[in-house]
Image: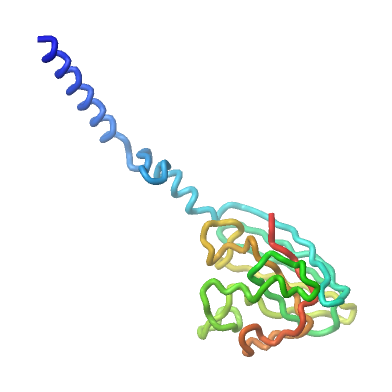
Length: 200
């Protein structure tokens, strides 16, 4: 009799637990692999919409006198880069994101090549024939040696999990010459005269 009573209690507990789990919404259930609810997973997946800002200092390279700042702002799923540079010769200058956050080499070579996570040819941003995610383009420098550029895209993020979008761990490189958007793999933009590591 005692065994029957215990069996009934155990069965009732199982039924109660099953009903409780069925009453949980999909948003409340915890994923057995991630230990996160659906709401928590969605919040993490949407980290490109989180507002962030980074301000970086441009360091001179290749014996130049280049200086300036680069500001990255992430808002509403887009990243805006504003660079203000001085110490350059008058004319057009290439500016790109390179693959390593390393400005240690005197010539900037430690920054590596253009950031190109999609493995495409170098080109003008948006070109149907392909372009690097780091192919920002050119900006104009006046007779006083100063210039600026503002660039906005939804192809970048600051610190998200998508490595095809995440600009953290890369560098901004300012070149001595103009990007021709044609020469491979970097547009023949000349020496690297300024470098800023994209780090938090």
